[in-house]
Length: 62
Image (cartoon, rainbow, N blue to C red; front, side, top):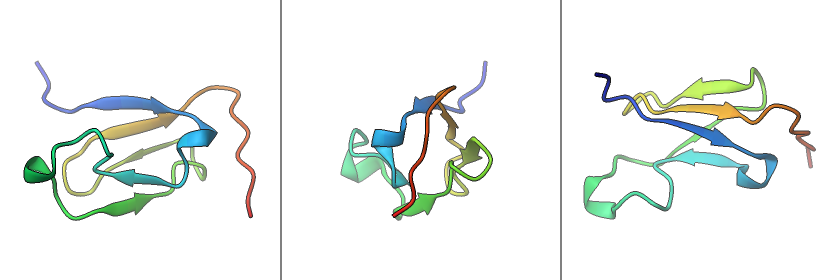
């Protein structure tokens, strides 16, 4: 059994950062912003949580 968490995100979730707001502050690591739009998937360098951009999502740059 793996302890790695995986989440599917949408364009509305961007800019993406880990930990997310759902994580209790006492159980978190320093916030790091992740570029999921570049390849469609990314893993947090601190905790290994994997984020995948939902299929068909269109990311608009500013």
